[in-house]
Length: 270
Figure 1 (cartoon, rainbow, N blue to C red):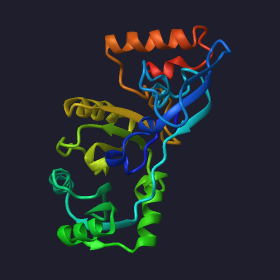
Figure 2: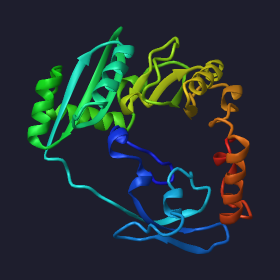
Figure 3: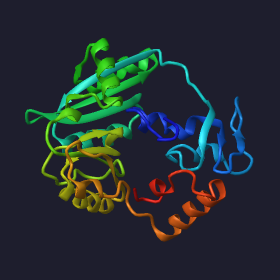
Figure 4: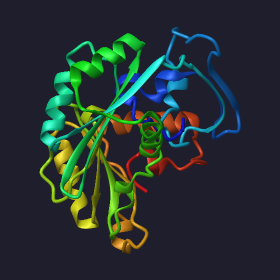
């Protein structure tokens, strides 16, 4: 989870996994054991190397230990469902984000030509109850809602199992970005900041261009099982800008000068 930088449905409100890393111990490319950060409170002096490990895909070293900040479970939770289009869902989420509501997670997807927005609320009992009355929608049974959110986190929702020779693309864009014009409807998370698309190999360039236009980037998250050799050669990540590429290479040289680990993954090529 740390090396991949994976974040669940609550990323937009709870923060990224790197925000919860207090400290870490890793083995670098020289075989040295390095320790960064702390175990109880964050070390605010100097550069926070432990947070740099989140999302590094194991290119900086083997993470041996990690200390994480944990938070108490919210006393109340509710999930509301709204039928709406993708554009309406983005408009609603942007509007709700400007209000004092206990928003925790959201997702939108389309099934049988019907779009549905699920909104999870978490917080004090009074705050959640008041938000439910204010927002309306159809309140979902707690047990089913919790199972669905876990399925969303683990990509076990029916949407992720749509058959066909399609790869899974992840677009990271600003929450305020409008709906992207594409042949198939996406699955939206993080109040619109994370958008999943199922696309064939020759559609990847369009998704990357759309993400750049929206001010974000695209990642080829999972390749279709029956993808052609040409499809498998498509880079997983967008190419880095020259300044960012220099910073990445300098970090890799410092942590792993002999290229023991897979540097190519972090530099935008397989």
